[in-house]
Image 1 (cartoon, rainbow, N blue to C red):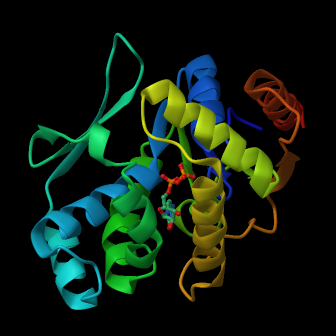
Image 2: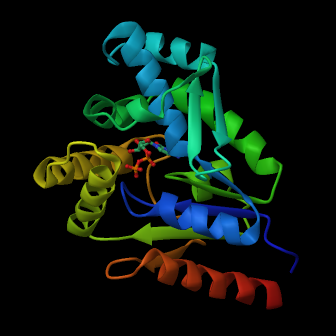
Length: 227
Ligand code: CDP
C-alpha cells in the first residue's frame, strides 16, 4: 500500500483530536486541518451579525458569504483563524460560541457549504483532518480513520486544564454540562451525525497521554504501509 495521504480523526467534544492530530501531522509532515474551527467561525459570524443563531436561512446565508482563512503560526504552531481578515482565535471558544455551535452545525446548508470546502482541502492529500464526520462524510475514502473515545469526566477535566492554561474562566461542572449537551446534539442530528465510520479504528484515550495515542496511531500507519 502507498503512503496514506488522507488521515481522518473524529470523536466527541474535547476528546483530544486537536492535540493528537497536530502531533501526528507534525510527525508525518502533513497539513493539520481542524474542521471544528470552521463551524465555530460560522457561529461567531452569525452571533456578531444576528445576535442569535435561530434563523436557519439567515445563518446559512451568512455562512455562504463569510470570508475565512486558516493559517499556521510558524512560531507557535497554532492554527490562526481569520474572519474577514480579523484574527478571531480568542473568540472561538467563548461560552456563547460553545453553547450555539452544535445548533449551527446541524443546519443542512451550513454543513453543505463547509463540507465542500473541507473536501477540496482533503483532495490535496497529505492531510490530517479532524472533526465529527470526516471518516463518514468528508473523506469517506481516507486511507486511515481514527475515532477517539474518552469518558465525559476525563474530557471535561482536559478542557478545564486547557482553558486554565489559556487564561479562560473554567468551571468544571459547566464544561461537563456543555460537553454532554454538544455530544447529544452532535450524535442525534439527521445530517452527518457524530459516529465512527465502519472502518474506523477506535482508540480509547482515557488514562493515555497524547504521545501514547500518537504511538498507537503510528503502529496502525506502519501496519497499513506494510500490508
Ligand atoms: O474542540 P471541541 O471538541 O470542543 O469542538 P470542535 O471540534 O471545535 O467542534 C465544535 C462543534 O462543531 C462540534 O460540537 C460540532 O457541533 C461541530 N462540528 C461538526 O459538526 N462537524 C465537524 N466536522 C466538526 C465540528
